[in-house]
Length: 81
Image (cartoon, rainbow, N blue to C red; front, side):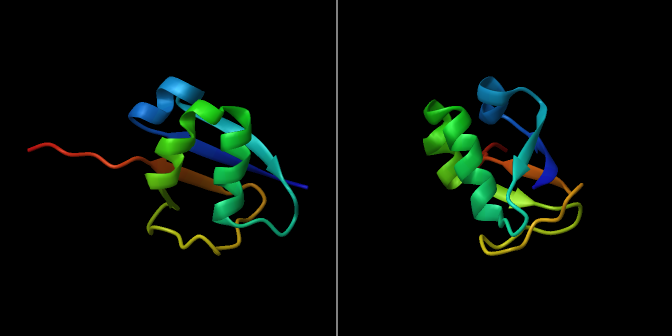
């Protein structure tokens, strides 16, 4: 098992708080992070489907392999001016 830290923003904070750590199987992907969070709070599912996962410097593809001890950012869509 690996542990990753997820920072959450905007509406997702209402469901999970500012950040949380999750345990995942050793060969997990960005998509698996969404699945674990949906299991933790199914009410967040719609927001998780449209949110982007990022590392420190890039958005991540769904098949990106996450690393133990990694820090990731889950960003829901936003608008404004």
